[in-house]
Length: 147
Image 1: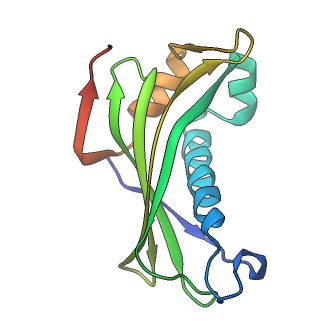
Image 2 (image 1 turned 135 degrees about the horizontal axis):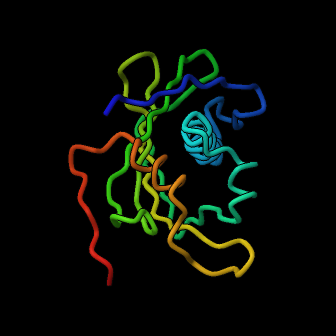
């Protein structure tokens, strides 16, 4: 599958007192990248509301490798690392690069889909499965078996 990347904009408000990117901005960028990918596959936030489903994150962590400063050019990518075949449970990662090829951070997360009316985990509708099925796969991708 084709790699998915988005260029990111660093704002003055994104910086901490040390002059580098605040830790919480990395997580915001991950959410931005995921929503951009899904929207480009037709699964907009409005469509998720109509389908009465939404993603829920169980765990999210970021490993910081290099400082990002205001002058840096920054890109983020997205890869599915694990999933059940029905995409009801999944794991993915984002890599954040600065100045072309310098790996600055890696975000890893695990999640599932929730029925927003019943407030319970659910198997997502076909539109969700289509969007997740189009997501780039990590080299180490593996299918999860239901427990």
